[in-house]
Image (cartoon, rainbow, N blue to C red):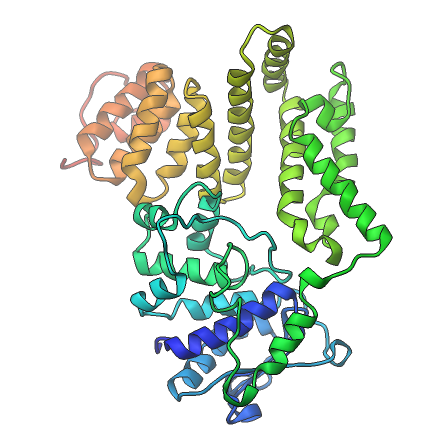
Length: 467
């Protein structure tokens, strides 16, 4: 497919980003010269509700038209076209169907076709002090269909501690791929962006063709929003709740006594979920608080996961008693609590298939409490899913084994990593170690060419023929 030219990219991605960030309604002309003939995209509150392009005839499933829309935009770019946004009264636009792509999705799609790495670095204006962090005002219309592992990795690193250069230099992805993703996430408002980044300020076209967009976005920008007394009260209540839970013990977070049984804990969690689950709080007056609300509910969920699990609850009760009795230094206790909470969040992210988010949580866990073998084990398991991170996975699993030499599962994960990397001799050694602690492990027995009854050294079964 043709690469996306810099001029068209800055204008088109800027328009789509502005629509996504503010949840705007209107239509985008892919080519202002040909207007309707060049292709039209219609948005309802930032979500695609209709389109008219060469390949869309008779197709009403907008989710399937994303590639075709991309091809139409690239064709317009190659012809020297200029895109144009025209605001339309919202009651004149049919609401978008469920699952339709957002303006943010289309912007991210287009950014993947930018090949000029120098142009990207110029647009991002990377400085030594620039840090990757989430936007203070997340987009009203967020991307969903276009988000992939690349964007997931970058969002997991966007905690304000790493500079852009550090993220780029340590990324397991190619530099061009990393820059594209950073550029697109900034343009749509997922990451904090300098005011000059395309998508923050849309330069008017000659003759003021886009001045309508400038006026429209300025007039309806969130900064100028006004809330009703009820909405303001609701915001203040939620902000207070978010501040409070950060410093509370887990029983107080759920609002239960320390003697509460499993049924009471479950009931309390379900009650809080009905009040504070982020999906129940998608309201216009809360659009800038979504990340804060997600963080609050993550703490509530961590509290439930800990207190509803007998072993984790017993461990937490002991830690809480020690803290209250003053037998531990508060700073050390705080780090242990952060590590435990991060570990539990990592397990949840891993179960949901969110690899990069899980790794980030496990990294926080091992940094705050490097004494727990299970933290290093799960970090190594996730790292081992990416071939480029196998060395890190090896280091994590070896540390888990050092802390718990009898952990058959850590030996097994390490054997799998060596096996994938073609290090057969090392893999065999790890499979042997598995059998020392778990003699009936079928995977290890099969890898070593032994039957279930044969636990001697035996002959290898042909799975490993060379180092």
